Length: 231
Image 1 (cartoon, rainbow, N blue to C red):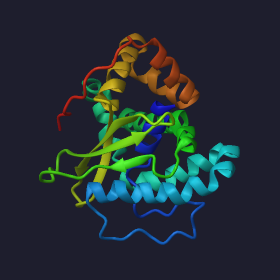
Image 2 (image 1 turned 120 degrees about the vertical axis):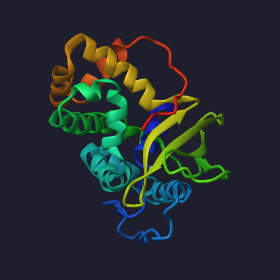
Image 3 (image 1 turned 180 degrees about the horizontal axis):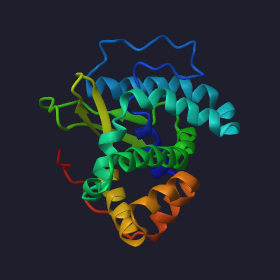
């Protein structure tokens, strides 16, 4: 449950400007809330209003749930950068078209794989920790604690980078020291070595979360510590 919830929250961690479909009564987020920490805090507020109040409706309509995530995610999540990091060395081998297709297929698969984790979100289950240090435009970490049903807490950190247009965008989530970019890069690398990058993309495009789940099951067990991604 925790794994699903934490990553589902990560899917939404770029939200500020886009109003969720089911939260039309919500006041728009402040334009001043532009720092990474402010973005995450705004997301928590939106989750309180959007998910908690509409859980049953979203549970009965997964496509509506996906639509909510798309509305709040796409403007503030650096899908292209994250997908290049996940491809790793294979990004150089891929054509621009393949990189674009992989980014979309991987995002769609991830979204469908973990969307239902948001339904487990409860008000107050995520606490944003105080930010210390200076903002690093290439990699700034926002640290949070997620409270699980049994009362235990776990660290969930969000990695942001500043784009050329000045907007901060999230591109990675680190759960208990394990980076999802690093984790999926290892799995994608193993899969590409088996079937090739084109077949991997086709599998994600046609099978979606099932292809992702199979890739996860086939991957070697054991997470690796989060690594600082190169740019």
